[in-house]
Length: 402
Image 1 (cartoon, helix red, strand yellow):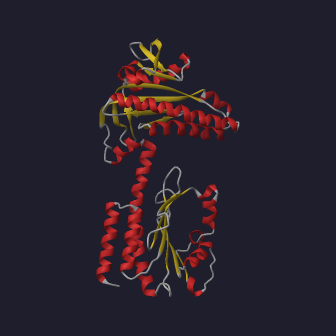
Image 2: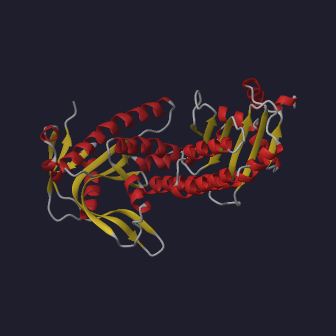
C-alpha cells in the first residue's frame, strides 16, 4: 500500500479521535480513505454499545454511493425481546460474542454457506466477500460497552485480496480506538444531562466542577409532587411503584423540557425545575406553558393506567420566582449541581399548600407581579397565606381553567 495513503489515514484517525468528529463522519472518512488506499469496501456496518436510559447502542452505516440507507440508528435493549432481539441472535456478531471469536469471513462469491440471514441478503445485493470483527474493550471498561462490532463487504468479483485484508486488519484497531474516544464523549454527555439536568450537565462538562462555585441567578422555580403518593405506595405491590413513578415523571419532565425549562432534581415523587430567560416575564410564560403541557400529559397517563387497572395520581404544583445560587454544593468527593436559597424553600412550601387549599397549582405573588399581562389575566387569587418558615404571609394565585 502507498506510504502517503497510510500517513494520511493515520493523520485522519488521530484527528477524528482527538477532535471528536461525529461517528458517521469518522466512518465516512475512514471508508473513503480505505478505498483511496486500494481496499474496495462497498458496504460497512459498525455497532457500539452505550450508556443510555433507553437505547442500548448505536449503529452506523456506510455504502459506496451513499444513497438509500439510514446512516445512524439506535437500538433498544435486546434483552427486552422484539424484532431487534430476534435479528441479534441470528447475526454473525452474536455468534462471535457467544463463541469468544474475534473474526469471521465468508466468501460469498465462492458459494460458501450462508449460515446467517444477513449473508443471503448481501449475496442478493451483489456483495462477494464479508468480514465481521469484534474489537473488545477491557472487561467492565464502562457499563455494558464491551467492544466495537463491525462488518466490511466488497462487491469486487474476486472479493478482498489477502494484502487488502491485511491492510484492513492493521487499521481497524486504530479506527475502533477513535470510535471509542468519540463514543465515550457522547456517553459522558448523556450521563451528566440525564442525572444532573440539561443545563447543569452542560455546565459540568464545560468545567464548572469546583466545589463552592455558584452563580447568583434569577429564575422561575417549579416544584411539583404527586397527590396521595404515600397511600398509593403503601397499597401497591413493590414492582408497581417504579413504573408508576416513571410514568408520571416522564409526563412532568417532558413538559418542563419542551417548554424550555430544566429539571434539576427528582426527590421521591417530587420534581424541582427552573426556567431562566433574559426577560423574567418570558421565563414565567415558559413555566405556565409547561404547566399546561404537563396537565394534558398527566391526564393521558392516568387514562392509560386506569384502563389497565393500575393506580393513578394527580400532580400538584407550586410556582415562584426569585434569586437563587446555582452551582456546586457538597463535600470534597460528592457534589450536587443544584439551586439553593430561600426562594427554593418557598416554592416547596407553596406546593405543599395545594393540598389544604384544594388547588392543583399555586402561584406566588412574586411570579404574578412579573408575568406578562396576558398571563396575569389568567390568574385568580386564592387568598393570603402564611408559609411555614417564611416570615411574611403572601397572596397566592391559581390558574383560571377554561
